[in-house]
Image 1 (cartoon, protein in one colour):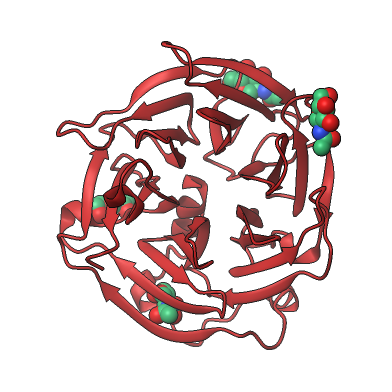
Image 2 (cartoon, rainbow, N blue to C red; image 1 turned 180 degrees about the vertical axis):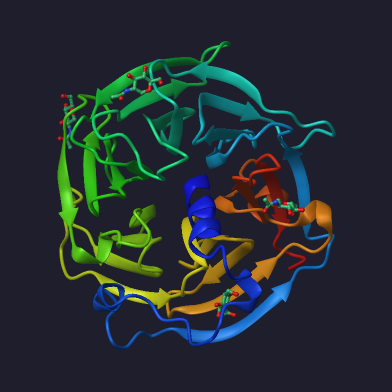
Length: 347
Ligand SMILES: *[C@@H]1O[C@H](CO)[C@@H](O)[C@H](O)[C@H]1NC(C)=O
Ligand SMILES: *[C@@H]1O[C@H](CO)[C@@H](O)[C@H](O)[C@H]1NC(C)=O
Ligand SMILES: *[C@@H]1O[C@H](CO)[C@@H](O)[C@H](O)[C@H]1NC(C)=O
Ligand SMILES: *[C@@H]1O[C@H](CO)[C@@H](O)[C@H](O)[C@H]1NC(C)=O
């Protein structure tokens, strides 16, 4: 979320991120949440050749892009945490520009988005404060936006008043109507039937929880090979939990990789091999293998700098798109959110 970037700017205001003292210590209660040993393997951080990272679009206004999904025709569906507008964009045209396709009434922003049926997308709506970095409990709902009609249409799936800060969404493998959503401020995975609107708690774990320092815990979600993979922004962790067919846990939550503040994982996509491609604050795309091996990629020139990446998704619709990661960024206090295309053949 944009909030994450702003929050860190405040938290670490006396330091430049690059000059953060090596001896910087987290409050004791933070450390309690971090298991003593982690399978975290250091590798490298590489600036991608400038040709690999392309700016597809940048908002002139302070639109904090938050999430995206790829349509089968190669177009993108975009959300912003500070606007209640679902945008669609064809990234394959010279002057690609997002167009507003649906406005959710009565909320200030949108977060997670996932395809639930061919060209039908579920979108999380709710109220977020960019001053307190917290969401308004009771403000959350999930909507569906259908692109199968000439004019996309939107309708509510369910109000989820018990949600604290509903964020990343994913589908459940093998299920037609169940999606899972990360409730970031309490550390719960919620389950929603998109056909009936029925919803309840699917999984709870301290490993999904936020921390005192960062109020958003579990964030991006993906299901792959019978497991739910997740990022916890506050705890700086990437992990997984085996799933039952109904979306509840079939075993223990396992942590696969970690990073330390002020670097923050946000949302991600997975490739066929189970490698996660993570939008990482303040300026990186992080690759994490199932063994927990990590690699960072950053943009180079000023037009390809990644400014508070919030989400990453593979393209669809062509071989080239399938080798492209599209990223949304929130931008910062002076520049608007970006849509970036990263050509993985060149990184
Ligand atoms: C990725 O970048 C972060 C922030 O600079 C750093 O802490 C981490 O060690 C890097 N990871 C790797 C594998 O280089
Ligand atoms: C969310 O924000 C909108 C627009 O400011 C406001 O009308 C609505 O009452 C808010 N909802 C809640 C539950 O606070
Ligand atoms: C979801 O709701 C629909 C409509 O009520 C129902 O037919 C379906 O069985 C439900 N799915 C699950 C997995 O409970
Ligand atoms: C926002 O990002 C731009 C481009 O990287 C940078 O020049 C500017 O200093 C940043 N502003 C803030 C307030 O961080």
